[in-house]
Figure 1 (cartoon, rainbow, N blue to C red):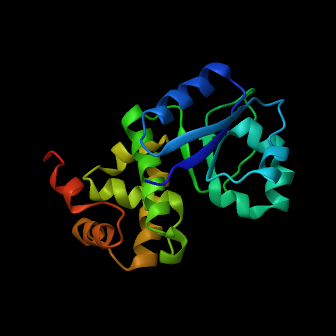
Figure 2: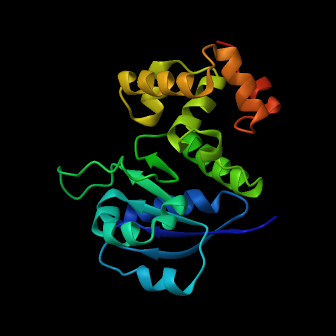
Length: 203
């Protein structure tokens, strides 16, 4: 199995160590470096290859010039939502990040996201080539797993209205309106496996 290298750029020591502990539970993952908000990780990226960057919102905004000048890094970047230093944070939705994780998500959801990223990398699966954003792909996965809009909103720390908007955009892009149709699409495109779908508890 190929080992995927991660660097972490998170100001909070406790949060950073919590993410490290989570990653250490996942086979095929290696944490290469850890940085706080005041540490410079740019030199490391100039000299080393990494597969993924996990970065807090505060640290991302402090480093926006880097991501503007090197947009290819966005394809490797996982944003940690909710990792604030203060209450005012600008909207970063304009940046096409790999995906995001929320401090409000439970451990299983977080591990599932990391597994999905690793599987997608191993299979060379590009969600953009399918016309879906990383967020939309996550929602397709959760819909296929039987979660309601409200449950998806709670898991992703979004409003139900935002989830419904994503669902509408997904329907428009794929031309699929039924849950069963989305489930078939998700299986065919390796967003969810038949085994995963078959193992889900009935509601």
